[in-house]
Length: 110
Ligand code: AMP
Ligand code: ZN
Image (cartoon, rainbow, N blue to C red; front, top):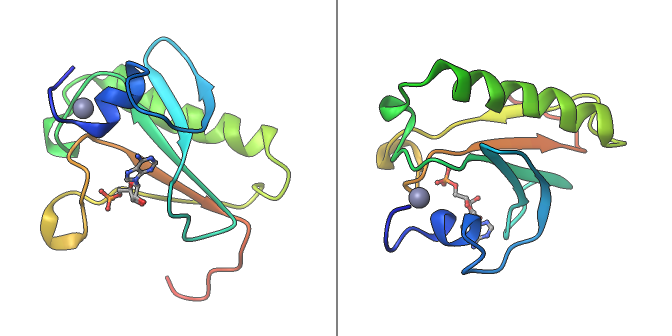
């Protein structure tokens, strides 16, 4: 847990969030400012600042399998898009690794 990290605080239940699912090493919450009708954040419980710091292939694999499971369990999320912003220059604003799970609308851009 990193001090001053909002996602570490949510994982520790010291800050509020709408929790969608939880396992030993992954937490899924609803994004506070959803960009699509379904917008979840798939968050490893271990603090990594960004994807470049991820050094555990099990965690990487579990982030992806969590997306598969969310799709299976969520009506409207058979089709979905995953997104990781790595670095401030491409829009990362929370420096605790997370993957956006986006669904419920048609994407016309790439
Ligand atoms: P990124 O720009 O990739 O770092 O994404 C950060 C995301 O976290 C944004 O979509 C925010 O809306 C979302 N976010 C920030 N704070 C919270 C929070 N307290 N609870 C839920 N989502 C949050
Ligand atoms: Zn953190």
